[in-house]
Image 1 (cartoon, rainbow, N blue to C red):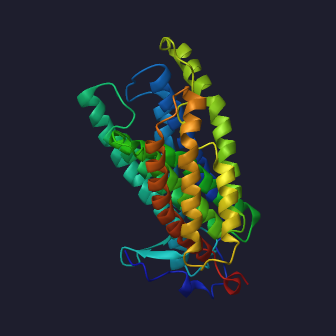
Image 2 (image 1 turned 30 degrees about the vertical axis):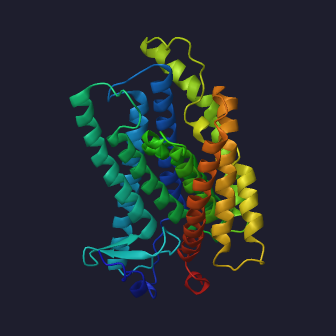
Image 3 (image 1 turned 60 degrees about the vertical axis):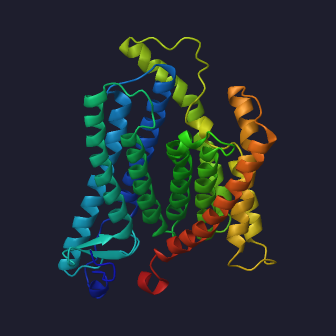
Amino acid sequence: MDLTATGRGVTATATAPLTLRPWLPAAILFTASITFSIGSTWDIQWHSDVGPDTFFTLPHLFIYASAAVAGFTGLTVILVTSAAGRAGRRVDGELGGPGIGVFGRTFTAPLGYMVASLGAASFLLYGLWDLWWHSLYGFDAVIDSPPHIGLFLSSTVISVGTVIVFAAARAHRWGWLGALFALAHLVTNSTVTALAVQRLNAGNIRWTVVVTAFMVVLLLVAGAGFLRWGATVTAVFGSATQAVFWWFAPWAARTYADFVGLPMREHIRAIPSTPALIPFVLIPVGLVIDLLLRRTSVGARGLPAVAGAVGGAIIAGCNPVQNHIVYDAPIAQASAILATVVAAALFAALGGFLGWRFGGMLRLTAPSQEALA
């Protein structure tokens, strides 16, 4: 793979531009990401309210269909743009970002679609591992099995590709809105990935909260780095998604259980498993990040880290209250809360540092005004 060459530069003088509208494959790719969210939220709620499941279930169909749609969409765009480049036709720079030469420049892959395609390929490999896992161990006793964590990480890669695809068209309203909505989708999904470290929660520090704070802050600061007030808009989209899935998850699990004739667990409280993992304070944290990043009293290099640390501390500090409201859990000891807040602030500072640079990279995926002319 050649990361320095682009097949689009040699086609700038072409007289017959490619007619594929950038918004169409972007919309299909985003639909694939939402399909994964529906399937994963449904599946996790099923584990909570009904019990273990097999490989072949309706929620799993949604999950694997999302990867298939994303993979075929990315592959189609890559083949179309590669063929257009060979034919001397100009490819719109807003179609997924800058072109990347692949396999000795045999193909010209738009950056966003290449990332999404790699995520889809990884997803299907982890899916085969999950199928083998089921054949070896039977039912899934826990949601955080190794194949499942791999599936969520692969879906994250697909979603990152989706963000890049929309960011490349940020000159259009659908482009920047789609990029922020895709970032919000990453925010809501990242909380499930944090379950991979829940077995480390034996000490004072709740590492699931720390990882959640890191991921959420990284993505919100990326939104702020991409667009003014981007953190707040991303947080609003994330909270709206949380509200929709708060209703959907218990309803879908109960409806599907009735359809297949399986009983619900006794004494369940129908708490939405996945939405309950998402911090309730997304919007306040987004506002704080945007307001801090507008200040000039701190050096520009350190300001994103400061904003990230503050956001991470808010998320970790409010987590015990959220758990008390949702699960009626007792408030943790002050020493555990303090240790978690400090760890979350430190990791979130790194998240703010990285997120600001990721947001700047997203801006660079869009073609220059000269290229659009």
